[in-house]
Length: 228
Image (tube, rainbow, N blue to C red; front, side, top):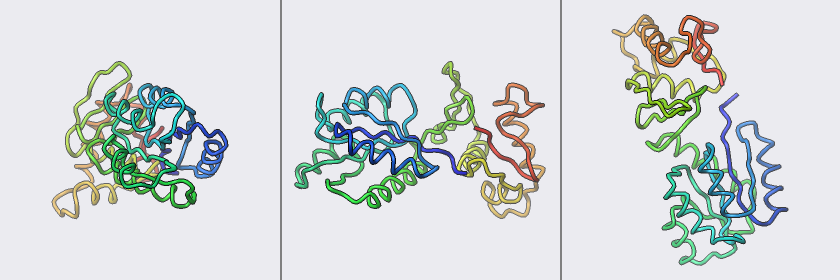
């Protein structure tokens, strides 16, 4: 099963918000959080991990574009898709300049919004701004960092970062040693599984409370996987 993406749906239309949440909840890859106002959205992206936000323009307490500006000022780097009843060019430009990544005009087909959500998540995961949760750590591959709940930072090497990124994308699936070698080192005849095992050992020394009893990066079925 792939890792779950946390989505925020912010729209003051309760019926639309609930319908979108119900439809997205049918997919195991998503966990949906809903709110009906801008301040609720700003609080959600500030206090917890939100992988993508769907923001209505017409919110009761603040223009949705102003809310996006506030979210960006507070450090939110995830994709934002704006929903609007206006389809003018000026309206779209204003939303994009506020920090949104995309614009969807109401009424829209769910399949179109779903495709946009998935496309922006894929693009973001490959970017320097991507942030993932691995066990008790916030993983920032662009900065080669793991940050624990107290804010302490663990610096990672390039290969350690690549290993964690690939295992994270595999979800709870086991990744074989040969697959991981090929993905991280390429098809290099000089690199053996011993090299990979050495890197796994060093990673566990950094991230595991008890490296001898791995609880985050575990060995299973001839390969490795990350436990949530």
